[in-house]
Length: 430
Image (cartoon, rainbow, N blue to C red; front, side, top):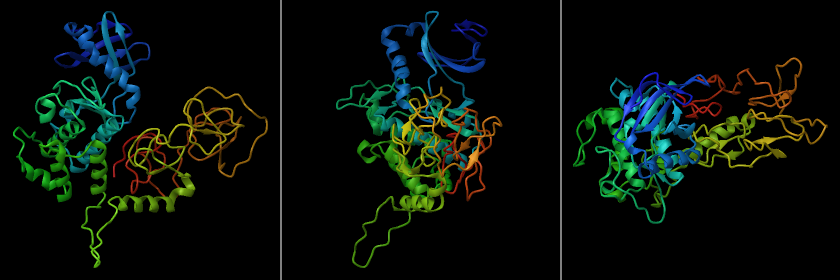
């Protein structure tokens, strides 16, 4: 065990946060960057290649799983004979949060973020294999991040895995060494049930479980049925993966669970995502011109623009495919569009470009000017930096037609449509 005030490379240990069977997590101070971080360090008996495989897998998966609701890994290296994984330091785990009173709206916000995290992992063909409240970490503004992908498996045509996981949340088929996407769906359903009821369902899993009245008091009947399907004992009775489960949750939560009207001709075929298409159309009528939302999110197909850092509908970062742009060139770092006469990227804080022309092109999208008195270059809405002098745009951009502001970055948003701030990626309270 590492002790308080012990130095580990550039880190100074402050306290132990948790202690698991194979690793401990510590709060430490990065003495170079002067910020507190969480360090995951395997125990001495786990410092061999057999046990380190899981920790190395977790570090290698991090770049593939970039998402606002998945814990990023800042560094993974050997320090003084220890394998150390450095991560951002959260405030508390979901387990700790569930010990206090929690409103229905907050519980649903956390549910949506948990679903978004696991859904993104499944889209990347990664099965977490250890979904539990301890592995969801809360940050300021109730932002939830999923961590601990050490047991995770990359789905292939033939999946071989042990029955790893945490007793109490493990799916029956995973307990006998056959984890699948539906196993994560099952574990996630148990976590959500516990979040809403304050009670963890125990084996054998039968419906209705204990404290179902608390769940029914907080959810509409269609959402209760949604949760029931998630924790079905047979994998084939559950949702195919968390992405499908997440899409169904958003559909039901936004009031699309009304009974379909059957025409006299008996034709009851109706697009189950019709409500979402209508919502997208309403949004486009109001904001397409102001936001230039000409693209679709590659995760949920919601309308997005190049200036957005994340999808406001599903929270997915980098919602547009790389090198897809309406501009004549693209930034080599963030791959967002750029004009040939810009000297810097207005979307990311990178080094300057090699200017390809001395000519300055006019553009009807220019509507503001840089606040730097020595520059005063023209700016387009929602630029983060001046493309002429690289100064940060400090004036919060408004959203024409909405008076709402993101509580984190204060840029304009509309919670009648959006679940996430597209400018700072934080979740929005609806």
